[in-house]
Image (cartoon, rainbow, N blue to C red; front, side, top):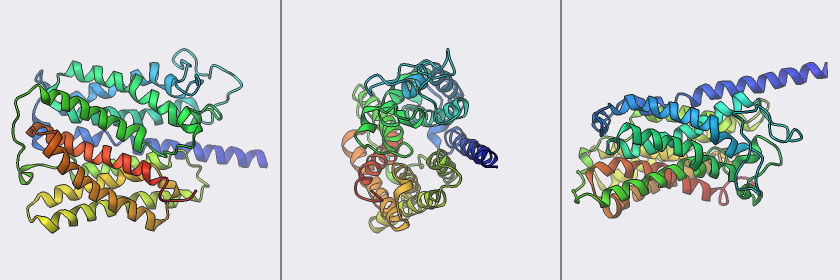
Length: 354
């Protein structure tokens, strides 16, 4: 009877991981569905931006499967990177190191994290590059950039005891505030800033003329994905499951409301809704680091600060760092994912359980 119970629990946990995988796979829709004027403009080689995303997704899945997953979750070389190649073998290099999750489900689940990072870079650079350049960037992100940093933070999630160097110091990041959101957005910022330095300065458009980088439907799809990312590796029996879901929703809601109110206090134009949507996404990003550790009040506090920081960072970027009109979308993405990711990581030591 005990064996039957263990089998049922194992199957339920596997089913939950598959369900959250479906949620995370909805995230690319937030980038595929055109929702502002910028996304209707083609890439440098004339291919529509929302169609070229398919090639980026293909590059990420194949690159991560062939190389990236092994670097991220293979047997660790002094905590710096993994040395296994799961393309050649479905088993860890050392048979004494048993995986905690089935390889296929875990690999596909983690590939959605890497896909999000690649889509952030793709959206930030947009039509400044051609399709081939975007595909090469997606391969770099999925095969090297995210897997190496991800190994430092998450290597022990697949094989117990196989920890990266940051993980051994006690670094905590539940669902990618730094390894995904911050790393990808700050990487994109450097690329866009360098590209902008080679072009003649052009004034940014008025904030009232800007479309949101994420529409209402996009932030809701992003929210569903982050709900899956934050809870996918929790067992179904965990008492943290419901509270984690609640914390994600509360943080996003507080971020949206505070970003909207803070902007409305100084302005009366339609940019208020743009900031509200950005604040919602910032709250989602910030809570990914510590969603399992917060009380509801702490989640609200975290999200509210993330919403205000989003407004302040966006204003700073467009004023001092990204002066071109085509760079405003990048500024919004960095304010959401870069600022929210860093604040979420710092909040681990300020909020939540020990």
